[in-house]
Image (cartoon, rainbow, N blue to C red; front, top):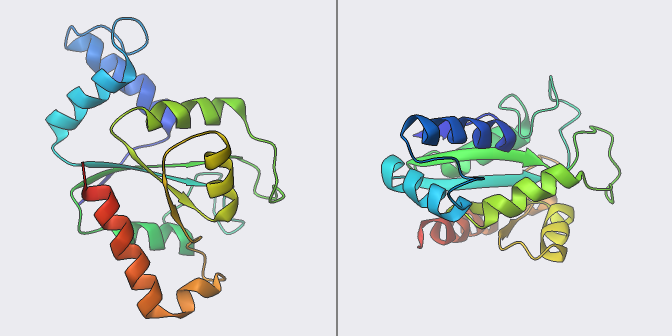
Length: 173
């Protein structure tokens, strides 16, 4: 079962409201993100996965990351469909026409860095996202871009092995 959340920004705001309702303060004032995330993970009892790409697909009806109607969106959901997972998606740029070396939006990077200090397992999709996360010192697992245009996926055996490796990485503590 996949539980999708909106965006990392909306997740943080909603999580803060939930913590306040439970009398636990907010993650930005009284709790650090790691403690708040640990609390959530113990309650949800699932894996927490954060997919990061470069920019929205030109085929996406909006600017959301890995929209479910796109090839990439369908692929990443297929990868984790058998996990009891809380899944979030983000792009480093909201520009559908962003060149491969697009300048990053600082807000996106700060949220991604915050997620990396939590219980989320961050997975980059594509070499550009992988390179940018590495440059920023963010621990993650690098996956080939899930696009139907990526030749990596032409070899089913190789693709299945990479998905298995990613799932093993997600499931280890």
